[in-house]
Image (cartoon, rainbow over all chains, first blue to last red; front, top):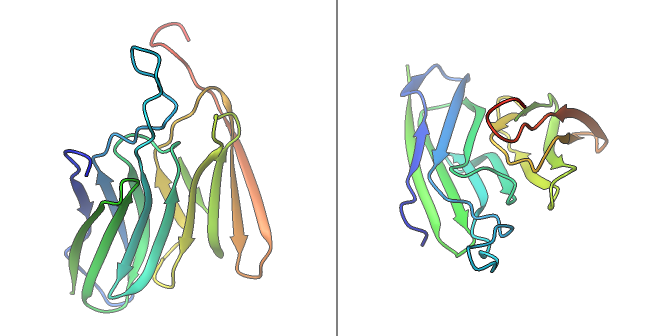
Length: 109
Length: 76
């Protein structure tokens, strides 16, 4: 596992049923592109998060395939619909096989 | 970079001037309220950034925008 990977997610605590909520996610990751060279001229191997997947109560919200052109500390902002109270599950998949997960529950106001 | 494609089922972003042009591919599920996404990307230099969206009926639409990349803090 890459060191110091910390997912941060901003989701409203409550919403009206059927409402649209804006979700902002940030995960700390160096996203080594595989293009850079170290001081000896050797290529630094690629090490990125290659997939980001969001579900709400098991239903798909968004599934993003990430390439090395995404910046360090990948940030994503998108909108989701909340049909009922439940939980958003966020999953990031690392090149090295690590999986980073976090979840946020939303109540119906 | 932000992209908004109402009615799309998937969006792919390409940076034509990067060593590897693929940037992201996003698939929207039934609970995506809008087919929009914002993120931060790396660009190797001034170039066109291209978005291709797949619409629900199977057709594709394309949009592109030129992004000027200034290297160094002064003068540009």
